[in-house]
Structure formats: structure tokens, C-alpha cells
Image 1 (cartoon, one colour):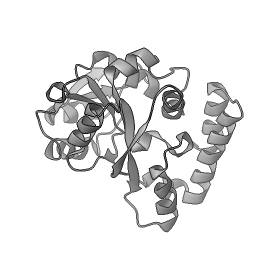
Image 2: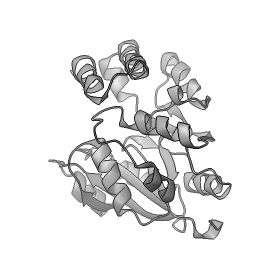
Image 3: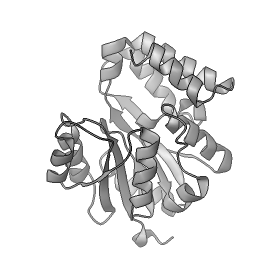
Image 4: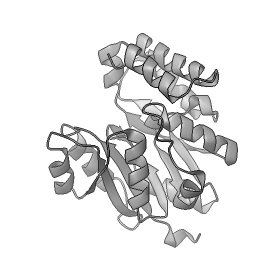
Length: 234
């Protein structure tokens, strides 16, 4: 692909994100170039707050999908017009000029990858685990780090497995690691530490680690979701 023809579709799955979606969309616009961004797609899974209205007021295109992150991500990819897909969490902010970093990587034949990650927290505990996002191993990956992938590779890979209610990012990235080179970009996204602060940092990290272990030992999507419901979402 020629560099000047590369454009990004940013895909953000949401459900009741009215409190922060305006900040995210304004940040994305301020920290990227219009020539590189074809669209920002908000994939709403049935919000009952003002998420949709706020997103539209801040320049995003809103489409509606069945609830579930994998379903929303796949629906966003299906409707995207850009030849690069950039999957982003609503509470994650990529670095300044993130769009150019992604386009440069794809132009250099890196068809998929992510940024490293930092938390919006001064916690040494969280900083320790965030440090490992620079390591190019699938165990160090997660959706909070965002994900870029060419639309061509996404389509040929089959996209996200909708059997996974949780762990869909890790399952998909694990397949990508087996089929192609996964590029770690030398810059950082900043993601919210809210979940860790609310539920206990050590406790939550332990349970995420257990989910990785269960997946490694062969647990399927239903078993992972059952563990998540019992240990994390309560």
C-alpha cells in the first residue's frame, strides 16, 4: 500500500460512556491529523444514557450493534471505510500523533500491532505491570493497549471470536501472534486505573493473571466468562 493512501478508521465500542466520551473524542481530534483519520466510529451496544448524543455532537459517527465487545468490534470493522482499523477503549488515550505512528508502521509492512501502556495513576504496583507492555509476547498484551490492524488482515483472520464475552482481545491477538509479526510501537497509550482503584489493585491483577493461566490450560469462552462473573464483575 502506498503511504499517502493509508487512512485509519478508529473504532470505539461503548456502553453508557456519557461521562467521558466527549473528552476522548476531543482528545483524538486534537492529537491527530484529519488527512490520516477517515472516521471515528462509535459502536453503541445499547446505552441508556446520553452517550450517543454526546458522541454525535463531538464529530463521531455512531452505529448500533448487539451488546458485547466482540460483536461491537466486529460490527465496527464491517462498517469501517478506512484501510487501517484502530480499536480503542473509550477510557484510553493514545499518544500525540498516534495516527502517523500507526501509518508509518503499516507503510513499513507491519500489518498489526499496538502501543505500550501507562496508567493514569502514580501507583508503583501498576507501573510495574505496565512496564511489561514493552515485551513482545502475547501474555503481555491486552485491549487497553489499543490495537491497529489492516482491514485486509482483519478480514482474512476472521476477526474477533464472538463466543468470547470477555477475553476477546487476548484471544484475537493470540491468533495474530501465530499468523504474523506483531509490532510493539515505542510510545504509550494512557489508560484509566479506575477499575483497579475501585476493586483493589493486587486482587484485580491476580484475577487477570488467573484468566491468562486458565486460557493457557485450555479453558474455553464459557469457563473464562464464569470466572470473570464470579471474581471480577461482582
